[in-house]
Length: 62
Image (cartoon, rainbow, N blue to C red; front, side, top):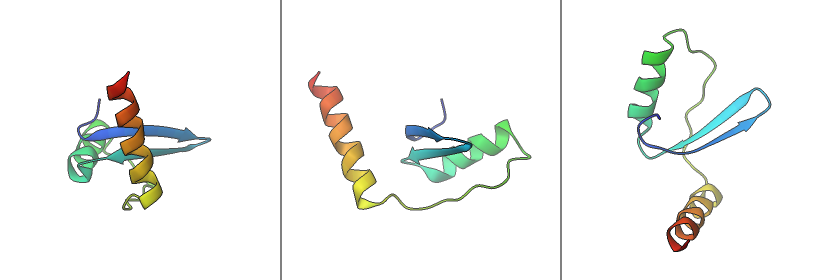
């Protein structure tokens, strides 16, 4: 598992990673595959943040 990763989604050839520590996650990705290309780093949207909080709350309640 990559450090800081909270959620991974696969959409066709694209993979989205939600992380609490972008630097640590990227360092691990590059260590695993130094030839990694075509990636984008972006802040989570409010919708993503709320969905993650709700998902974690539901997991804790179960």
